Image (cartoon, rainbow, N blue to C red; front, top):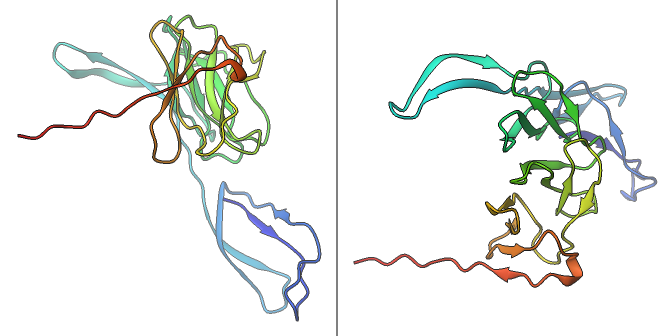
Length: 214
């Protein structure tokens, strides 16, 4: 969360110009209060960091074995990670950072690659089963839609153009021929074919199963 300011007419409250950001050295700035002379501002700030670790796990004993090993380090926020089908790469987003972008990194912590670099909120990457594409949801059109990108950052492409509830976290079918799209507001998710343009989609709604009680 960032602070913004806008000029107003003191007596009427009429806005006199466009909003502009007040840059602070924190990812979260809130509860502002001005000095009486209007020249100084006090605010509360919160700095948030999140990094990825790898740890060995015994599936038979259901126990963690060994010590965790860092994959990412530093001040960048690394969240919503997803491992590639070949097990060599992790895709992650920087949800909660000043700029929410997509990244991939090797499981050994090497070869960090930034896939997007823009003011849009790019969230929750998911690898396709063949490892050739990564889907994510983003507000780069003014509302959250589903997009895809190649692991090298090329071929950024919009997949959905919805109305009503906006897209949120979505996922691939095991064969990569279908994507399950979830919505941000209550309602049934739907299935789409990523090989067809949006205008040719015949979306099928997923019905929720009612639970039966004795």
